[in-house]
Image (cartoon, rainbow, N blue to C red; front, side, top):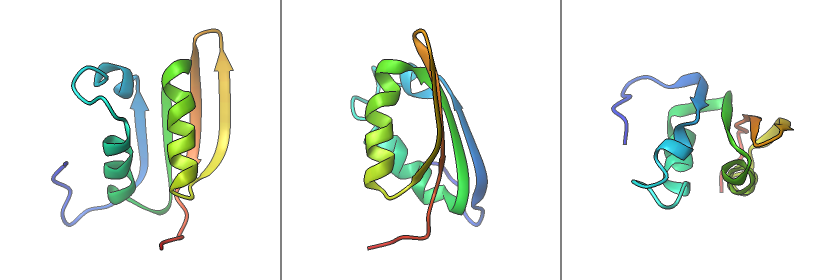
Amino acid sequence: SFGTYPRTYDLLHADHLFSRLKNRCKQPVSIVVEMDRILRPGGLTIIRDKVEILNPLEEILRSLHWEIRMTFYQEKEGIICAQKTTWRP
């Protein structure tokens, strides 16, 4: 986990973060859950990575009830822009 207390963030940008941590962290869910924790409701995340990594990430973000604002793929890379909603169980 990241030491963020007492701060939360409005924007997170991950440029190839998930592909770099692929060997250390097999499941990207743990990283996305940490992003969910430190991002304010209404905050945005921009994720740029390989297409084979972005497809499962999009499913994880949707399962957390995030709104996918934009998905753009070009050749083997893509960008996802997602917004955290105020939904909580």
